[in-house]
Image (tube, rainbow, N blue to C red; front, top):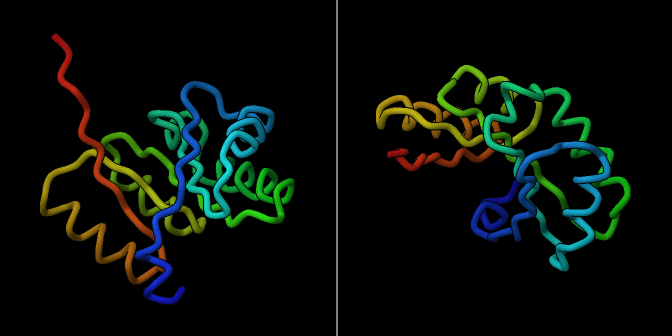
Length: 124
């Protein structure tokens, strides 16, 4: 991936609750951009797993060959799942401390992936 690709912001297609092929296809069809970041539901790494979400992204992307589609898997507070996401060619989002996040950033960069930080709202 060229460095300028990392700077180009893709439009986000966010899956709120379900991650079925139909939901992913609908999210992509509503997004007019050519570059799309398909974002899993909260905790998607726990409920779906990285490999399933990767396959879902691939199947949906095949239905929209005119779009460049990347997937970002919400890994909640489990950095190990972010590593698994990277191994499957996915970007990740994780809720973690600063030191661990910096290490994950280095790993993401080396593997050609991206990582985002989750900042959950405190309930109450």
